[in-house]
Length: 534
Image (tube, rainbow, N blue to C red; front, top):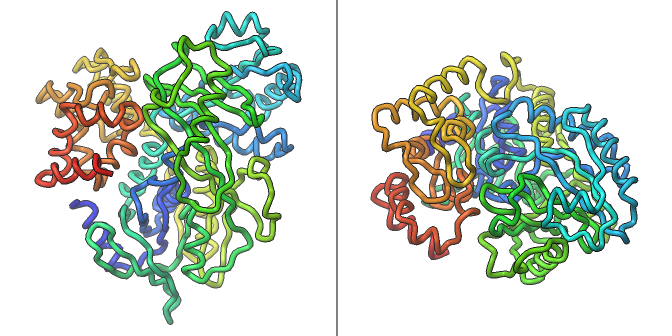
C-alpha cells in the first residue's frame, strides 16, 4: 500500500497538468505517452487497473479483417499499421500467429473471394506477416484433423497477432511505464464529481474505495477515458459531446486445451460473424458474441454459453462435445462503440465501426476518448498528446519512442545473466517457455533484480502455484511495485492464473495462501476469504 498511498498524496496535494479518469487501454496509453512527453499526470480508476473492458478481450492484436466487409479499408490499414508497430516494439509480448479459417458451403462468399480478401488484408498490412494460403477440405483435415469439414467448401490460412500474456497485463505495463516516469496512479479511487473553479482548474471530488476517505484532485486538463462509463462521467462533469457510446456485450469461455497446434481456429458462427478458438497457455479461449446492451454491467448467461458451445461443437470433431461443466473461466465485457449522437437506435452493433474518437472541448479543457481497440492503442496515445498540447500544456519530445521494450543493451545484459544462472533451462508448465523469457516479457528491466535474488537464493526460481508458471521471485516485486489491493488483482489482471485454474483448484492450491501472505501480510486471511466468498 506504500506506493498507492504516496500516489494518492500527490493527487491530493499537487496541481496536475492532466488527470486521466479510467485506466483501461485508452487511459493507460494516454498516461504513458503524456508522462514520456514531460507532463505531470495523474491516473485514477474506480476499479483496479484494466479492471473492466480491458480484461475481457480475445487477446488478439489484429488489423480487423472483418471490417473490410464494411469497406472500412482506411480503418483496417491503420489497425494493421498499429499491429505491425506493436509486433516490432513488443517482440516478447506481441507475437504473430496463424489463423485457419474454415468456410461453410452455404456461406455468402466463396473461399476464393475470402482468399482474395486475405491477400488484400496482407497488402494493407504491408506484407509484415506470412502470406495467406488457400486450403482444400482435404488439406484442412491434414493440417487440423479436429475440424469437421463435411459442410466446408475450403479454408484460408493467414496471419495476425496475439498477446502472449493476458490483455490486462499488457495494459498494466503501460501504467507501470507511466508510474516509472512520475505518474501518480491509484486504483480503487472513484471520481464522484468534477467541476471547474474560478481559476479554470478542474476539481475532482474523489473517493478512496478502500477506506471511504474523500479528497480533491486539481488539474489543468481532464481526460475522460472511462471506457463504457465515458457518457456517465461526461454527464457528471457537465460536458456535452458530439459522440457517445453504443454498447455491445462480448463473451469468451475458457476450456481445456482442445488442439495441440498453436494456431487460431476461425469459423463463421451461426450469425455469420467471425468466431474463434484461441490458444491461451494450456487452455483454449472460445468466442465471441456480439449483443447490444444498455447497461455496462453484464454477465454471462445460459444463452451465451449455449451459443458458444453449440457453435464450437458443431465445427469440431471432439471426442466428447464441450459442456458447461468443462468451462474453467468466463470473460464477459462490453465493447464501447463510438457513434454520433442521433444515430438510429436499432443500428446493428455488428455493423458499427470499431474506430476510436478523441473529442476535445477546448473551452472546458476536457478530452473524451470514445471507442477504440487494443490494437490501436499507440495511435490513441499519440493523438491524446497532440490534443493536450493544443490545450496549452507544454510537452517535450521524448528521447526515442514512448513505448516498447527496454533497449538492446539491457536485454543482452539480462539474458547473459539468465544464461549464467541456468534459468533459460527452466520451463514453465503452462506455456512450455523458458523462465528467462517469461520474466523478461512480464517485467522487462525490473526482472534484472529478480535474477540477482535467484543468484542469492535458487529456491526463488521455484513455482508457487502449480500449472501457472508463477515463481517465488515474482511475488516480492508484485507486492512492492504493482499496487495489488485484492487477490483478484493478482489472479486476474497482473497474471492470468484465474483463467487457467478453476476456483476449486485455486482454493486447494498450496501456494496461493503463501502468495496472500507475501502480498497482504497480516490481512492475508481476510483477502483470501474475500476472494472466495465473492
